[in-house]
Image (cartoon, rainbow, N blue to C red):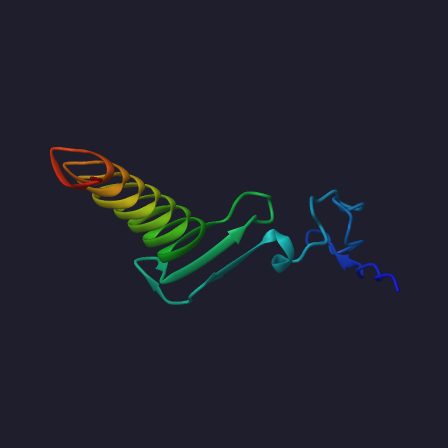
Amino acid sequence: MSPSPPPPSSCRVCKSEVRAGDLTCAHCGAPRPARAEFSGEGYEWRTAATWIGSPLIHVAFGLDAEGRPRVARGVIAIGQRARGAVAIGIVATGFVAIGFVAIGLFSLGIVAVAALAALGINAIAPWAVGVVALGYWAGGLAPLGWHLLFTRG
C-alpha cells in the first residue's frame, strides 16, 4: 500500500488551489504557497495581555510569510531569536538571557556575555563562570580575571 499524496491546499496569498509539493504558486508566484502556519513555516503565539506595549509572553519559531526568521519580542520571549526581559532562545538578548548565544545583564549559554554575571562554556562578564571565563571575578577551567573564584587544580 503506497501512501496517498497530500491533498491540495489554497495559496495563502491569492487563495487559488496549489499542490502541497509545489514550491511556488502557479497563479501568483508566492513562495511556499501551500504550507500552513504550523507545517514548516513556523509558529507564533503571544498573550493578549501587554506591559508597556509588549506582550507578556511571545513565542516565535521558524519563518514568517516573507521568509524572514521570526523574532520573539516580549516580557518573556521564547524562540530561535528572542528579545525580552527574560529571553530564551538560540540567540537571546535581554535582562536575563538564556541561549546558545546569550547577551544580557545576566546570561546563561554556550557563549554568555553579560553586564553583571555570565555562566557558560565561554563567559564574559564582571562575574564570569565557565570553561573559559573572562571577568573581574572569574572561575572555571581557564579563568582570566583580577580575582579568581576557582580554577582547575
